[in-house]
Image (cartoon, rainbow, N blue to C red):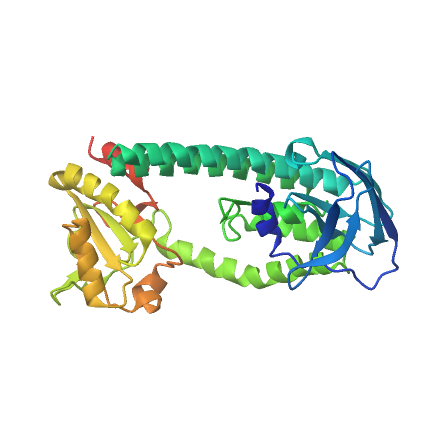
Length: 386
């Protein structure tokens, strides 16, 4: 069910009525092809998606529902066939909705509720993106079946990155255009393939923009207050991240790393001056890291003789797990670890919050790129060794 993704994205929102004066809204609808069918009205609340009412369509598929809304409320209308319509309703609205039973996604029409119309627009874009993602997944499986896994991994990562960038462009434009509208709260939590489209750290300006606009309009809305508190809590973290960028951002000299290799001998990053070095954080337990390793092997075999080195830091917990992964993946470069998992001081020093993560250093130890993977890494190395 394609609405599942947006439903999951909405799950992080706190939606409750406030203490302001109540005002009615009404929903009059018709589900074509329905007769005496149950429709469940559910609302996203602080704790979960909670049922609010169950109503029956009449013999012609018509139904009606009314309630109060001091602040925006997010509803899901669910059929027994597990189809959904998501609506963000406001006080005083007289809403009309029509759809065909069994084809709700393709046929739903909403009028009289500007926020619901915006949510519908956003969801249709998400469905298109999800369809593309499903198609990419099918093509990826076909490529893997031909036995060229490294090439397939590179291809899917590139295509997925392009698709995520397209979705991010759409969501960013949506927020810029509708930052004063409550529907933008859902845009902030938009997900594609269960992956958030916006990163609160790198896209913090969008979170702040929506917060400033909506807090002026709906200061008593629990939904808006939830975002307001989140932005306030994130702000010092963003300031810390900006400070971190001065240490590990492009142009900075990479902080020194001196850790033991699997034989217990200390290896230092600074000893590799004069070479192009990829500082790569990974772990044997990290599935995405293991999928990326064939791309690193390919790059290493192609450029090592020209002066390319990989300095790989493991966040494993145990030596056997670490060493086994090195052997299994055929990783013939420098390996170090303090086996302290996420508590590794080196990981903290580099601001590592997820893996795989990497930094590309020039011959002077200066950071010239980060998180380069697959084709992107190879393209950068091509330029450096041209």
